[in-house]
Length: 229
Image (cartoon, rainbow, N blue to C red; front, top):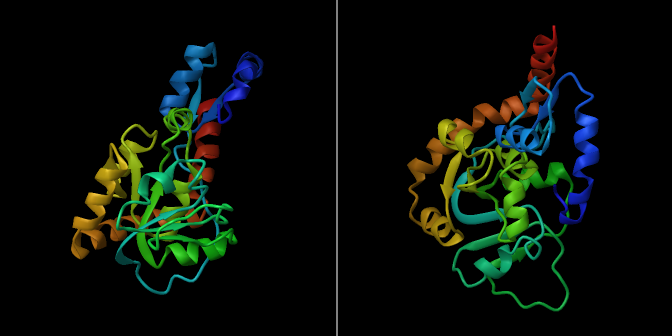
């Protein structure tokens, strides 16, 4: 599903999945999608979120900063074009594409190691899990985003689309803001108080520790064993 050109392979995967006794899937949305595509397996475990079992320098609290961090290609996901006219700081973790001009508010960090990424993200601001590309936007309705896990492991609040698979988790656990547009996201970031920001980081600190300790992977495997036996 991640690549539009792979749609024709779905029947092959459905045939393979139907040989299983149980499927571990990233979201409830994905479970329903697979059933609609022909999966007949009766037992499922919902993973919801990826673990990030990596340590990094985190001996301070993330700060409220009017800054949006994006770990990925700003071009591919349409982020740079959409936010380049904004006066908010945009930190993009990819190499700057050749031949493009961007305002002084857009900063390219190049590709860094995961530990370096988490350390830099932990300084503060917000983590953006988003796509302006319509096909990729549909994909986020079903998948578990590794970007979401990276931002949570780094301890910073999320900015997510209202249609993403993890929306309920974000809202119920106070992990960040759910919006319908990047314009709304910028407004929410710029008008947020430091106390409100600290409320988010306090909630996120709990799940950050779980992600470090591979809690969600272990839980999925244990749940699978209990479902089967």
